Image (cartoon, rainbow, N blue to C red; front, side, top):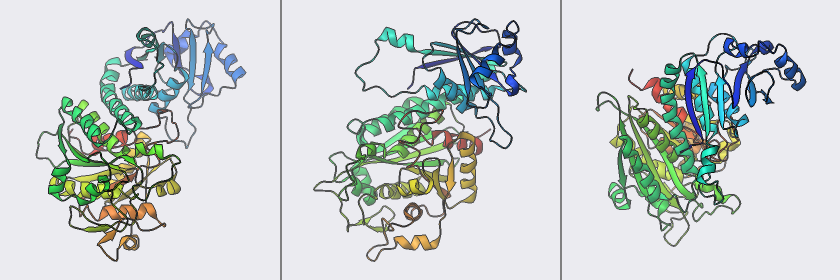
Length: 500
């Protein structure tokens, strides 16, 4: 977990020393507390803005070192002007932006007040969330590190001066748990594959027991008894045994309340198997378990904030390697559902893992709905790039709720089509289905493959190949592993499935 930022909330007051942040609106308007600091230095900000061509638009800043107008080592004037027709100010993104500007400052105070109108406690908490997420670093394997004393000096302290400190602290408690979940997901994705493999990943998931999550780990013998022939086939070429992990958070008043179910693909390393991938960028395939990482991060966040909902997280953990025991193109597998699958390409392995995971969840959890996350296809990058995850669903209400949660958190999704004509593309001559539908509509045919295992359960599939790893840096993330999906699904649960 990131320890680089310590966040506190205090009453609005004049701030001194360290780095000072104020927020400017149209015509460089400031909030009352901030404006009072500049009464004796009329024109200072106007002159500085004219010199630096600063217009105070959102996600822009004027950075002044040892300003003459205030007793601070550094003054950051952050713009918050949003044009008509643009989306509202994103306070988490604003917090991340400011954190990026002040990354090396030791002590930061921000006078968190609106230039016009009011910002509530939730806005302050969102700002703090973005600030913390921007501070995440994954450097545990760097041998050249500051010593303990230097590291202590590098720890940054952020104090948000707000109108309602207690309200902001209460609101931030939820966001702090969420930040921990995102950071956990990022760290799992960033880990090297010689450290994070199915058995060790399962051990990491078992740490959730400390937060009150029930965790059950099935080994290959257990899965064999259940008939998980699709999942087990993927991992049979590796010396690392596969694992299946079920995490249950029971936060609703009634333990019998049907839970939400979140299912994650956990291919800890994907060589492509016998259908081996090209060498270029194969190292990135350590992140092919980002869906499973999201599920673990989400379960951490829900448990840490004591979410009033029943949620089950399910992850299938395998390593797809070539070897004497590896499954082959042409093999026919029998899934847990009893349906048979002809293997066309062993690099289309994630859907095999999810097939058994989704069917097990449908039959054993009997959830209100299922959402699966998977770095499933390169085709989704061709369709949507790295800005949106592809969303496929058999339920309009669920997909609509995910879309709105995406807009609220910035983890956006775009619904893709599904239709019988696409489903026909995965029919097989020799089995019930084949594991690829050919070159065309690759993400859609992969989703149709999964759909054959969910039955009538409301379900959504999120293809996160473009958003979970190696995605462009954002205001709240500069890490290779983004932790994408934790904020999205936490918002879905909080808005629609949590008891009030």
